[in-house]
Image 1 (cartoon, helix red, strand yellow):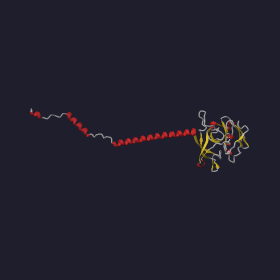
Image 2 (tube, one colour):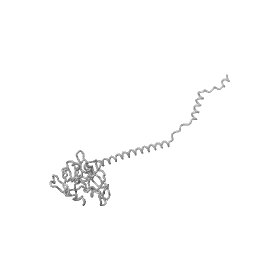
Image 3 (cartoon, one colour):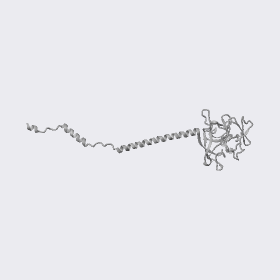
Image 4 (tube, one colour):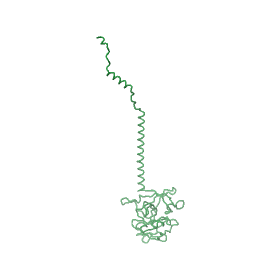
Length: 267
């Protein structure tokens, strides 16, 4: 009986299995925790990306506003225009004591002054105004001339001079054109069709360049000889809707910066 008591009891397989699992678990490496430095670097990179995206969106919004303002200003208020050719000499494009044949003075055109807002405008085009417009036969080109006759006027070219006839001046009134140079003073001749009398209809205007001997204007229906000149009486006159605006100020060349005044024929 004593010998049986000293005989060791066999180990329980369950305990041994549990011990082996614990050893295996201890032997396996623990998963590394993410380094703090890498986390901070990722956060900083994300902040920089967000700043860049915000900058791009802000820049795009500002550009959109700028372009929108430019469009509104040029469409409704004022726009640049580069004068071409000698037709308005010596008033415009007279540079270094001679008429410029190509592109010359850079001017600003006031569009707001004639703009029609629901039947109301600041002013109407009138005699003596220098205006930029599309000629009647095309909307691709721009001309610049001076308004001589308004609706209801009759303009007559007599002995090289310009006379105005209307209800106020039934016997005629010679327009004092001090802006004409020596070559053109008292030398306003008709076009090749020899028409000398122009009755301006409602809603239309009669225009001529200040350099009369080198101007394609109402006298020739805004067409030069190569374009066949006048092709009908209506071609002598310009619709008010064709007028873009009034010549306002010369911006370039810098030494010639000035306001562009309208002629006052009734001082």
